[in-house]
Amino acid sequence: MRIDCHSHCSVSVGPWPSHHQVVADARRLGVDKVCCSHPVATESADPKRVRAANDDITAAMRAYPDVILGQCFIDPGHIRFAQDEITRCVVDGGMIGLKFYHQYRMDDPVFAPVIERCAELGVPMLMHAGHPTDPAELATQPLISRADHFIAPARLYPEAVFIIGHIGGGGDWEWQIKAMSHATKNVYMDTSGSVIDAGMIEKAVRDLGAERLLFATDMSTERGVGKILDANITQRQKEMIWGENFQRILQMRKI
Amino acid sequence: MSMIYDADTWIGHWPYRRLPHTTAAELLRQMDSAGIDKALVGSLQGVFYKDSHEANRELVRQVRRYRDRLIPCAILNPAYFGWADDLKQCREEWSMPVLRLIPQYHPYKLTDDVAAEIVAAAHELKMTVAVYGRVMDLRGRSHLDHSRQVPTDEIMAMFRKFRGASFMLLNSDAVKPLRGAKAPKIYQDAAIMHGGCGIGIEKGLKICTAERLMFGSTMLLRYPRPALLAIETVKATKAQKEKILYKNLKRLIPEMG
Image (cartoon, rainbow over all chains, first blue to last red; front, side, top):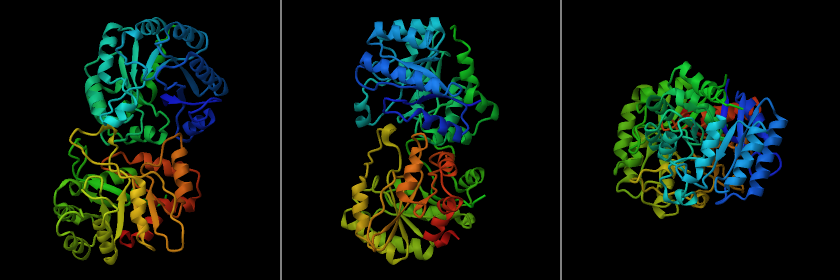
């Protein structure tokens, strides 16, 4: 079972690829299920836009119930609205977890009530993350979460499940691996992103363990699939990364 | 199963990150694992040595036993003294059919006179010139890496100076073919033309056409399978895929055999 735990799609409101395209692409490359969210990538995500984005994902889930698993996007800066969205989309709407973008860093106290809620519900939180070292790149997302920003909240909330987004999202992935190795075991990393540097997956398996890695593409499907196929690791480790680890996370849900 | 020729491989070390494989023998093992028959190969040391020609000399020695499958490419810095003699040696003594230019890391622009001079000299020696859209994704660059991004406009301005010539543009986004009877022909590899849920390679094929697109992996810097998957799964005829996977490169570089 190959589960892509980090992707995006749109049904009616852009800018992500259409849900039809995402599903066709998954089938083209042998991916069974795709977790999709619709993040609003502005400095502060307006609740109206967030609601429309989550409605869009709900429509995609209905169109492809066997393939698309929804992730609810929220901006913790609008906490009352965020809690209502978690109830609407996750508790009542069948989405499997949450997705955060770069409005706040993962160790910002603004996340506390959201993390507590996710721990109660047993649902995973996927954060857009990376360590862009190029100043121009960093300037476009100054509050992007690095792996070391997960260490304190993960220690504070051991029941919560954190996923560091895209090891290959464009940045110093060696830093990300090294920093994550200092985090508690409730922190996972997904393997998505356009960067396909040789040795990336092998180093992550060596330093973190295959049990903490989750296959994903973030829409770079050939790269996401190809880097796992090429990695010089055991078949057993690949099976864990392709889907077993994420299935185990999904089984932790209490709703 | 089609033959597969790779337009874009490297051996050697990258100074800012440990590579799991660095030698010609290891490149061949990776090629075997991915089903790749032959490859053009350059030395990463040619990017970083002050005198790139020392890396050409090393490369020839490193691939000597594997010349039936690995075809070495010269790397020279036209801003460094003596490039004309070095280029001749690469071609006449060592039978290198391709000159790779790396203005990202060497101190010149493709629009400078020195660039035009080395390209003209390479053409005189019946060599094909390869230019990189980018060598490395700079978003995670080392603090020691002061390379520059080379704008597409700069690359195209250089190409336009050579009517009737053929160029290789590697590890780049797809660029529209130049128009006109004597316009230079641009052969591109699909090394980064994937992503976007399959849209990347579809767009690359549409823009470059099956006549000018080639397979290129960029290994041993990166994993080879993504570029292969993109070509294997894109909507195209068998004949088109064969052109992309090896025939275009074979036609462009007869030394590929």
